[in-house]
Every structure is written in structure tokens, then in C-alpha cells.
Image (cartoon, rainbow, N blue to C red):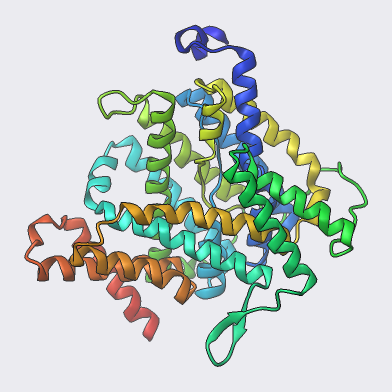
Length: 433
């Protein structure tokens, strides 16, 4: 084990790697409860999704640790699960089984892109500003979902939305959760989001807003309601422009989110040499494989988690950190009874905080160049206002060639962007029919 992971080479130990694995797990354990709550809104069985989430995270993280030997954990991604539930299933009216098939196909395409080493072509084709805008827009969308779930923002006929009743018990509980989580994050606590959820749930139980759980440890929920449901579909619904856009969006967000996370965490760990990431192909293969495996189990796109940086900061330098994290996700399977106390008021703070973290990419956009600012702004704003991540990405990708050509910078536009321009244009034409 020592020789395989290279403990001496990286100046680490079993103890340090184990602590790092635990730190990473605690930093991202919130996904075990947030993901089932989000996908349940799409009509999926909450218990089955809990099991699928834990298994997908464990399998994906184990592959990353053993194959790529990186201290990076994977789990169903925030933002992608919101896109799955609210944009694809509820917004487009696509059945969740078909949406899972879309996730599976996006994973297969990701695998092929990795195996045939054409990922660099795609990375270079999409301008950095649109990648940053997509990440920030997803952050605003997630935060909006959290504010809505907390009752802080409510529907209002005259202005679409307005401020809710902040004196309402559940809303006050969510606000408490936001404040506690913010304080923990500001103070630099590892796993601040997770501990914020724990504190919110405990206060909710103490005040009677949340029912006291009858047990903490229980049997593992059945995976049957979601397992292989991606292939129990009406195949006529697969060959549509609508699903093509869904697959492209899953692929786009997962691909660049993974690439950004891998580089950021690896750079923090000191793995990046001459701006190159060793074993990048194996890391991307682990991520793409986890996406397809997760879809078969019954969850939205599985991707690398930036929270892995907490494990690196705790000393994690090898894949053994990921092995420990994967093992903890398997143990977590037996804590499904706690789903009963994870209400929308408990998950809302996590969504809002994650949204804030993702919105930080706004600072990387060159707002002084109007030809860049327009498609970036439209991408960011359209996601929460249309309640659709796909719509935001599509609108931004349509405006980008227009503004760049108008500025006389047409030579800088990659041919793939023109292809996507027409694909997304056809998407809007299809929606209007």
C-alpha cells in the first residue's frame, strides 16, 4: 500500500492520509442529504437516491484514488442535480428516467473524449469567460432555489417574487442555518456546510419544527426504484433536439467543472508541473466513468468536488485519501433514517452557501470588454430568471458569436462555437413550436 500510493515520495503517512480522507468526507457529506431532497422534487424515490448518491460517491472516489492516485473525491454535483430536477424534468417535462439516460450518455461521451484525447480541443473551443459565467450562473440558480426553499423568497403576482415572512418558524430556522454556516465558513472550519446543517437540524428538533427521528442507524434503502431505470424508457423520446441539448449541457458543465476542480486541487497539492497535470487522463476517466455508473444506479451527474481541497489542506497527498473517503461514504449508507430530519429549511443554507462559492467566478470575467460582458451577463442572469441552466447556457452561446463578429473578432471564434450556435438556435425554435 505504501509503495503503491507513494507515501514516502509524497512525504505523508497512513495517519495523515486517513485524517485527510475524513476531513474531505465531512466537508462534502451534506450531498448525501441535499441530493436526495433535490431529486425527490423530480419524482424520484428519496431513499433510493440516497443509496445511489452514497454508492456513486464511493465508487467514483475509489476509482479516482486507485486509478489516478489523486486525493480528490467525487459525488453527484451541486448545480447538475438542480439542472436535472428543475430544468430538465420539471421545466422541460422530460421523465426522470429519460433524464438519467441523458446523464449516462453524457458520461459515455466524456469517456470517449478522454480516451481519444480530444479534451484539449473542446477546452480550447469554449472561451474561458463563458465557462466562468456558466459556473456563476449555476451558483445564482442554486442560491435562488435555497432562498425559495427557505421561504425567504416567495412568489408574488405583481413582481414575480418578493420577500417572505421572516418571522415564520421554518424560515427563521433556515436563516439561523445560513448565519451559523457563514460564521463557520468565515472562521475556516472544515466541513462548515455539513456542521451548519447539523446545527440547523438540532435546533429544528429542539423547537419542534422538525420531528425527532425514531432512529439514527437503519437498514440501507432499496436501490430498486432507480436502478437501471435509465434504460426503462420510451426510446422515441430519446431522439429529440431537446434531449440533445440536455446531454450537451450535462457534458459541458461536468467537463469544465471537473477540469477546473482537478487543476485547482492538484495545484494546491503541488502536483501541477509546467502548467501540466500528471495523470490527467486517468483522473478524467475516473470522473466520466463515475457519471455513467451513477446514472445506472439512479442519480444525476457525479463529478469531482472542490471540497477535496479541505483534505489536501489537512495533508492528503495520495490516492489513499480518496480510498478513506470512499469507505466513509459506504458506512454512511446505514444512516438513512436521518433523511427524515433533513427538511428544506435544513438544506437551504447549504444551497445558498454553495451558490455564493460558485458565484466567485464572476470576478474572473473581463467586464470591460462589452463583447464579452454581454454573453457572460446573459448566461448568468438567464439561469435564475428562466429557472433553467440549459437556457442560460444556450442564450450565452448564441450571443457570443454575434458580439464577437460585431467587434471584428470573428477569427477568435472556434468552429465548434458556430456549431453550438446553430444547435442552441434550433433548440429555441423547437421550444417555440
